[in-house]
Image (cartoon, rainbow, N blue to C red; front, top):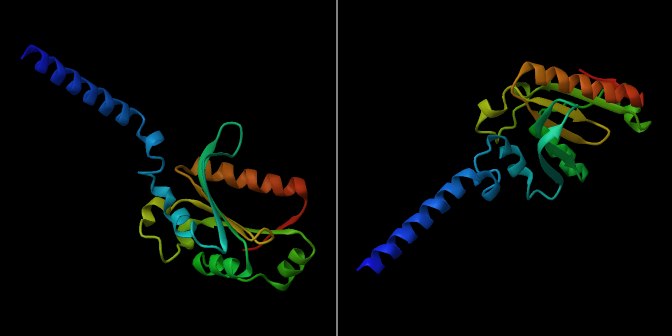
Length: 171
């Protein structure tokens, strides 16, 4: 009788320890399980014309890291899909000429101006910064939480472009 109660106590203790470990390390055990910023990434994961990457803690500068979703078209069909989904307009003749010369053309905007129709959790994305690279045919969504983060991302983006001296900014 005493032996059965000791075994029950040990089993109960093991279950409590396992539950505590699962709670403490749930993000590691189930990565992205509760991450609201993965909806767009998941939409493109199995789409062969777009390469989707979700970066946890993307390093913007020495003091700032934010999550980011990077979507890069692999084919013209993929770029057309990204343009349609994110309401990316066609370039002017000057912009097209810059791309033909190998120079970058970028557009930055708040996500609320270009929600894809498949996004159901608009509050999760509303204030995010969207960066569109016409040369790389890529869309990067920086999952920001504060205006300070927005400003730092835009500053860093244009600083990098100025260093390379290969850009124009289209509205």
